[in-house]
Amino acid sequence: MQEAHLKKQKFEAWLKQIGSLAVAFSGGVDSAFLLAVAANAISDKDKLLAVTETSPLHPGAEVAFARSFAARLNVRHVIIDAGMMTSPEFTANPPNRCYLCKRAILSRIIEAAENFGIRNVAHGVNVDDLGDFRPGMKAARELNIHAPLLEAGFTKQGIRRLSREMGLPTWNKPSSGCLATRIPYGHSIDLKKIQVIDASEVFLRALGFGGCRVRHYGELAKIEVSIRDVDRLRAPGIRHRVIKAFREIGFLYVSLDLEGFGSGRLNRSITSKPDNSDDPTGS
Image (cartoon, rainbow, N blue to C red; front, side, top):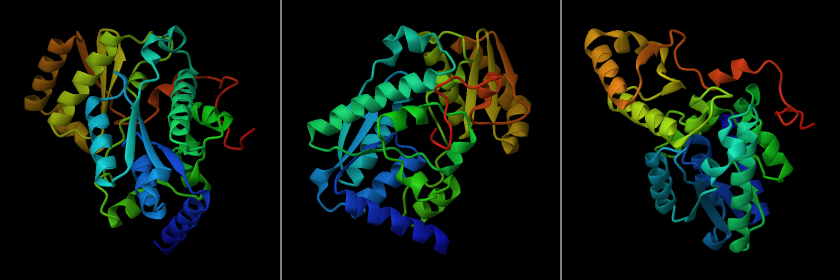
């Protein structure tokens, strides 16, 4: 834990040196930690801004949480919409979908920051994010977005531990992410699919399946829950309720992924990374 505290001190020193900052704030574990530490390190609240993207791609509860969390920290909060659902290039759902989305959102965040006289923007990427296909990180580098948690060497586990120590409600919050990530590459993204996915995951969370995903394969829903929850979901009482609800929501077939929950599962379909894929070396 001492190592984690040293990393935090390094991060705090960077924040005090940089002076002003806009945080790309989703309300998730990483960006919440980033914002909370920044709120303590930057004494002049006019020099700190939280910016949250809102659209059908993000569960409404996440935006509401982000708003309340920023208010709790007494941090100025701005909500933007990059309009990705109206972008034909994005809704075609190519393998570089996340690059297109991240670049558009971060560009809007830069604009919002400049409106408040803030030049520096940071996002909450950490060391663990280097282990998956994340083309959005390339977009962040192109736009000179800071990644202080990555630079300080924070892992997700370290962030959760420090968040718990700081009393942040996000310390054990399950990952959520953009709802477009539930649709396989090459399958078009539209509002109806997003709404069906959102309703399905809301239903599962109401049953107590916190870390879950519903992958959209047309008429088929593929459910991912943690391995420890697989048997509970397969129990007759729960299974029948899920099947009934999912059919009412709009799926004809319902399946369970026996591998359990896995973030970035659909990236397996990418046999080679496109030119704008992420490269941890920065090249």
